[in-house]
Length: 124
Image (tube, rainbow, N blue to C red):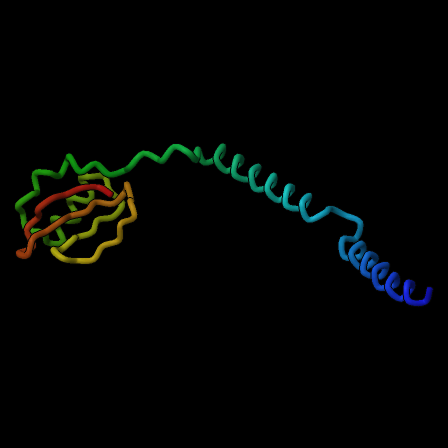
C-alpha cells in the first residue's frame, strides 16, 4: 500500500496546484471564448462609431489639375496643384524612384519625367 499512496500524493498535489492556479475561475477554453467575445464587441463598437467597413471619401480630386500635364513641376506648381485638387499632401514621383504602394486618398501624386515635366497627376 505504501507504493500506491506515494503515487497518489503527487497526483493529488498536482490537482490541487491546478485548482489553485485556476483559482476556481474559468477554464482556458472559457477564457478564450470570453476574450473572443470581448474582441468581437470591441470591433462592432468601433465600426459603429467610426463607420468602419465603408472607407472615408477621398479628399483629393485630380481631375481639376489635369491641365498641368507638360508643365515644369517646381515647388509653386506642385503646391498649387495640391490645393486645387483638394489634397492634404502631394508627392513628386520621379522616373525609377522607389515609392510606397499604400493608398492614400488624400494625397496627390505628381509623376514627372527626366526633365521634371509633369507626365501625370493622380490621387492615391
